[in-house]
Length: 320
Image (cartoon, rainbow, N blue to C red; front, side):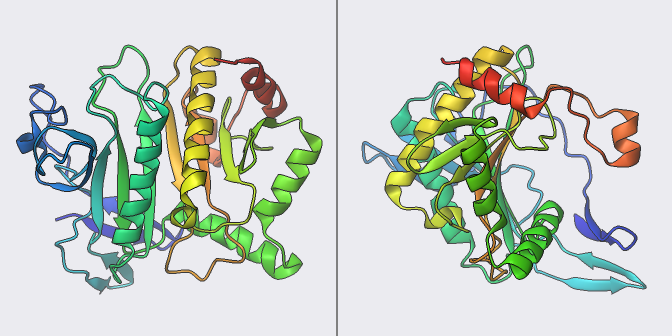
């Protein structure tokens, strides 16, 4: 049984989870024709009217085969002496982004990428109807060249608490709003767009910047230029604009860094919080070019060898 246990000395949650069995290395369970191996689909976009759990899909959602969180579990909050434990009720879903095994977000066509983003929205809207879920994270891990590729998918993780990183972020933006009555991210955007030195690209709807205190080389954020707290509330035309910008930035990274591994995260306000005034959804793309060293582990400081201003210039020049 998986368990969420809280460390009372740091206020952080830890998922206690047995190591899952290793795969057998057989055929990919997410390629067309192997739908039975990946389990029943939760949702899919199909352009030819094909039946569920058969080939013919463009984007498809399935439950993770060894999930971190399960929608079937009963939510139990329990005190274990002085400690707190919660059963991991929630959801662990995979959004299979393309029928083609070797696709990436940088190589799929614009319409396909827009469908992926729109399905992110659909899953957020569906899962937030569950009153026992408090927060959802959409993430994607892209592996480095030379590592065996897996089928392109994103992960949707829904949990009964607010993610620790989100909770810290909410604390900062809430305090900023309470003091200044303005959104921190809106102020950040105004300053970055005026200064321009860390701006990679601007469109009518979005800004792509390298953050002032980037945690690693070429970390980038994409933010809507108008205030929005929820990713799923964006109008359809903005998903098309985001798809164009996201594909462009990932291709620039590929050119500048020779196809780096990266983590992609979508930060949207938890629906358990009344954060419409002070939270601003955004996309974070973090290339994985450095290893966590002893100093970082001991102190909690990130070490970034590349100045954000230099990183922004590199990405501006790396036109695909």
